[in-house]
Image (cartoon, rainbow, N blue to C red):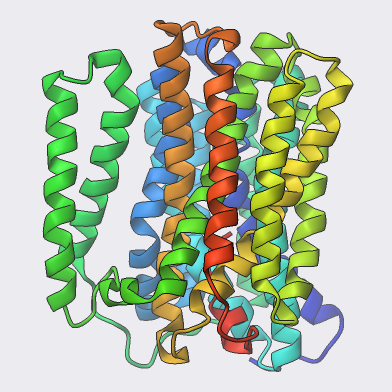
Length: 468
């Protein structure tokens, strides 16, 4: 799709990145509203975990399937469908009279998000056939995704205090409608000449694996680790995972490209993606209890206090894009791990200090997260042939969402386990969570030092970077 430089090109970026904003922000904006949701709907920690995790679990399970669907029925059509489902899910969430209905609405939002992510990035890349301009457009996509995930609590805090927790979801309705309008007017549809067949069995096995482990981790504290429900969920997850690997190895068009897991750089990139997004999701879930329960802040003040987190993530995401272009992805990832670990350690050290003292640690932690998204994808793809970049990028995106799921489930489990009740006291468990976040940062640092980026980023790498 050829477009002259200037205003029209800018609006194409806006059209795609508004959908990207919706897809990303609903992974974190709900966190700040959790105390209000708990009070109004009578939700405990396990229920709050499901309110956040249902979205990420659905997104992680369906990302690769949605990419195949977009190639088959058309990327613009898939993007429009994704935004429409996102709007419908937002309405269900806003009108929810109970936690189960709210979780169903979050599942709908997750389905919409999964449809948006691969379709939006493909349309953006195709709108800019010139390599240099395409790299800039993809940089904006990645930067907005990183910033909006970190900025979710800020936006949520501004809405919750005066308009209530339902406003977090009502806000998605006009934004989704605007994203649909811009896509209809500005974007040109496309599809693959030879779309890959659906791997339905692989999709079912992946979903059972993720859902089973998530259920066991979230409900283990509340139902008991040896309860029949938890043991059954864990067993199903293990059996599905064991069946998945040989099945995908034999499938001509696998949902999960198992053969890529033999590549050291690719596996290292997946590991860093999981740890980086685990760290941010864990911090954002913890923030709800730290700033509002422990520090006694209202939702607006708690949200505004995380501005340094979003500012740091935005700043380093832009710096990371420049490092990627120069072939210095490894340097960015080393800085990411070090800054995430330092930020988490500093937050631990200042948890009972003056409130203003957390500003710098939040900024440092945000810097660490911003250095992850683009460099980890390029590092993972660095030693693979360009013909496998698209398939590999879908697995990188799934790893990021899996990291978020583990961060939410893990932190919530520590919260509940340390307190022994749903009314978690921060002092009982804060140190364990900060320690886990420090370990995640150090894990990224070690993986980055042990992973060599085989070549500078190519236009194919930048175009193949999928997800946040």
